Length: 274
Ligand SMILES: Nc1ncnc2c1ncn2[C@@H]1O[C@H](COP(=O)(O)OP(=O)(O)OP(=O)(O)O)[C@@H](O)[C@H]1O
Ligand SMILES: [Mg+2]
Image (cartoon, rainbow, N blue to C red; front, side, top):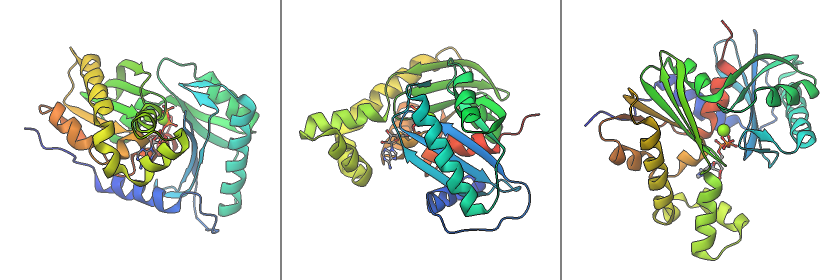
């Protein structure tokens, strides 16, 4: 069986720092050039600022229903959140941002995110598809990035850092929450809260949803040279996800960092246009 979860220490640290500082407004002074990345997701908008050593120094996360599967449903709402987060980051760091990186799920139109950022008054320094951002960060080769977000699961196969195949499946955290709501007779809000606070308890209920996702991933990567699976996205934070993927993919190296909700935003902020 392949060894699993070889998460580099710098990544573990960066993501745990992100989790620690998210939505905190204590001012900090940071020397050197800062880089900002903005991830417009189905469940949340995340803006992350890195210092010149790529260490996260400020992070904003707002749960939001403004984007659905790569399509901005509520342009004004998305722009307002970006503006608000920008103001919070600027107040915390005592600087003004003029540019930011952003991203798009493969197969969707990158101009959507670009338009939102520009409407919020930012110049777009780079716009990159999400798995390529992760591939770039981790120098991936013969690997697949599986991003289980709020609305969708994105699967991308990477060779020498380039996406050579991508697919998107409409199963994500929302379906996990729906499953909990249905089985426990709860409202969606209560089911979401239960999922976030008692992951271990709900795991047996939602395991079949992830089992299905694993089957879907297997279909997508069939025929491709994939040695490692990099799991990303907030939904992978449920205790049990890594073990399930390890069991389902015994021939693969399964890599899942803690705080996976911050992996894609971190990769977006860290991306440098060559
Ligand atoms: N600790 C946790 N345990 C379980 N699920 C979690 C946890 N934290 C976040 N989630 C789930 O992760 C999802 C959000 O993840 P993420 O931010 O990666 O999605 P997104 O980027 O907004 O969506 P998409 O990539 O589909 O556009 C939500 O469904 C949320 O309920
Ligand atoms: Mg996402």
